Length: 317
Image 1 (cartoon, rainbow, N blue to C red):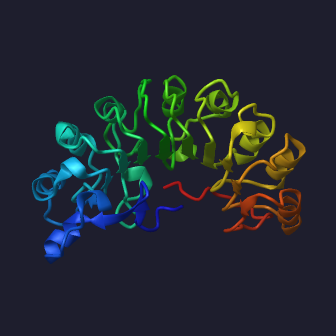
Image 2 (cartoon, rainbow, N blue to C red):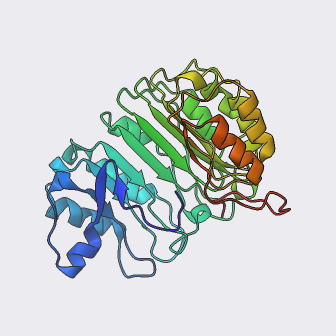
């Protein structure tokens, strides 16, 4: 997954661009048959909140199960606080909402570091039946705004949570670790780099590895990091791994050192899938992984040059 293209599916449904369809006079699908995307064109004379209201007026939103928030800024980075307030204000009209993707914005529209996120805790407190939440963006120090935030919460129904960032503040995984999410099955963090606000360290990830939290967890993604080898070494002996069905260590600076740690640690043959795409592994190590984990679906696509001095994560700026 990258930020090069808009998502085409979310929450098990095809994404339908509401704004484009209305402007073109196209027919609208059944409310529950699509993940409804509401976004405006960058540098266009449009207002996201007005388009959101148009969506509420034109669609039977009481039957909508998934919403995708696209670009909300007209001419530069704007905080998500305004659009978030509009979404929260319509909560009573969205009783069936189960999936929310905030920030389906490509790098051509806005670099991920310029997607000015805000405190997303109210999403979870306002929608107690939400089962999937994806948040893209953070905001680096050059952008005014509070940036992505989360406070510890208890949420009974959330099953999938992902934070996509080019630089994830440590406060976010810390808040997730302090939350009570008994139904959580899938958890992913794009950690990013320090230059774009990434302060998450290995110690901040240990609560997700020790196996004492989130009893329903079956998929863990610790991705897009410059410390991918260190993460792999920690995962190699992590108590949570035996109950995982899939593991994602992709998008980062992952080398033979990290792969060796994985193979010399606890067995991984029980996994259904292991995602390592965007890596710096030698051909010999890739072959060793395939042979050692022959029953596991391993993604080794997007290889970089193992001897490259300039190694980088997949998504930063």
